[in-house]
Amino acid sequence: MSWPFIAPGGRRGIRAETQAHLAAQIGAPLVLGFSEMTDSGGAEFSSERISGFMERSDRREWLLRLSNSRPMIWKTHPVPAGNEDKVAFVLVVGFGNGSPLPQPSGRWDIFVNDHLAISVRVVNHSQRWRSGPCAFAFAARRIESAQPFQSLTLSTLVRNEAFAAFGAALLVVPREWLQPGAPATIRIESRAEAESARWFQLEVAPSVLENSDLQRAADVLTAAPSRAGGYNVYFGDIHTHSGQVLDECANNGCGRGTREENYRFARGAGALDFYALTDHEWQIGPEGIASYLALADAHNCEGEFVCLPAFEHTNPLYGHRNAYFRDSGGTVVNANREWGRPVKEPAKCVAPPELWAALERPGVPFITVPHHPSAASHPTTFEFFHPEYDRLVEVYSCWGSSEYPGDFPRGVSDRLGESWTRDALRRGFRIGLIASSDGHDGHPGDAQSPLVKHHHLFHFCGSGRAAVLAPALTRREVFDALRDRRCYATTGVPMLLDVTVNGAPMGSERPRAAGRRARVRARCDALGPLDHLRIVKNGRVVCTVPCHGEWTSEVEWEDPADDAGAPACYHVRVVRRDRESAWSSPAWIE
Image 1 (cartoon, helix red, strand yellow):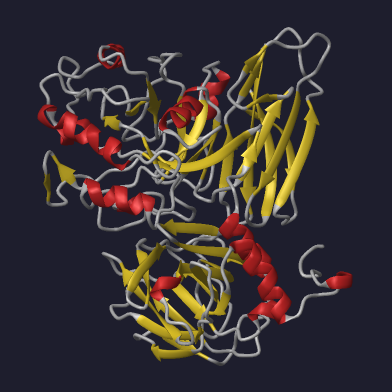
Image 2 (cartoon, rainbow, N blue to C red):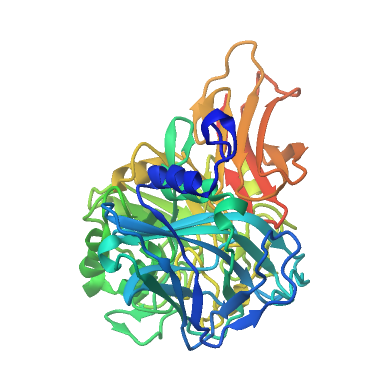
């Protein structure tokens, strides 16, 4: 049987059959999550003109902006009695950015009968959040986006938008919070440090069980990790900054929030599988190294939320590199020989070979990752390159794309000519590709804020994620996947990208099979409409495949110009229609 034709004889299921089918899948009875609005909390309301693609007989909708100071409160339909230990409320919701310009991020806290259930944030893709026994699964079924600096209007309420995503959602909470036969009260509160036009929308959909694709919401809720190349795929942000300097947090560093707050957001509203806090080494200080690195151990939860010990080596003369450790016991190395803020004095500045030597001394495996290599203010020189330690380059972050000149989205416009990622690949450097936020606003995985030093880095895609192909969600497996270049980059959307070259996974180095041309296979589930897929050989585009708005794409391509006498590397870039992108790490044949 296939959804929605789940009833005997292959007919479409009626309401009771639909509820029973989905309840069996998720292990909880379904309850309509909206019955009556008791306090809109100043949320914007409309019942005039809904979006043309929405199938609803009830046009009421409320839009709660991230800047709202009052909570929105509503009641659900009555909760039935039962033996299950949890209940799932069915909602129809939307997320969006109510401005043509990028807007500060934040979160919404959702309470059920005064119990904090979950924290969520704006997304333009399907997403599952978890917190203890609670979960919120959003299945984005319609994603709309405007061209940069332009806007779109979708309804009387949703106007002048940069992007919006709509779909069904399941909110799962423990039954012990609820009273059988009585409705539950749901409250949603905005949490933001700056004025923001981002929004959460609640829609009235009395026929959601009949007219929505709830199977997708159930699939999002119950899904195992995606698979690529025989591995699970996990997503993280491993480049963020807090507001602490040494042991004080007055937001006088380059970031926002305490280190603890950054860890909590990463696991909560950030919905990350793995995370690394990378405060600048001068903000840690020699006396604070042990306690700083110990935070990663304290928050690491194998199988649920992996934390890598890490820091940023802030070198103004040779480029910024993040250092990541496989285990506890690493160290922090200052770029200033006298311990202090970065200095542009060659006699005082630690050169990369000294960095690597100092990181070797504790005996803990590590890697170093250059980032924003082409930014004129903080460029990286590839004249210092260690093939054992410089395993990756951060191709994308809040600073924008560092893949090639003219790539969009880009952050700061001042870029240097020969420091792009494709230049490094043309020169023969064997580097994998990841992304992360380089977030400075206390929102790992969703960094956008005007309250920090680098507020000019706003742009029109996500803040960046690293994806790893690993057999399990543990610190060692995540680190090993990064070190082996078994990883890829996304602008923020957790797309599935599975790429092989002659059957070998991304990041690999393989001898060329006699008489066999290079064959690239790529599979992508973009969680939204795709524009195109490109295959890049030795830093140059050799094949472009249009995708015509389809959400998934599979490509198999044989290189007609493959030269058996020359080594080659291949990687794949996919771009959605809203410009969200993903880059595979290259694979090498020789």
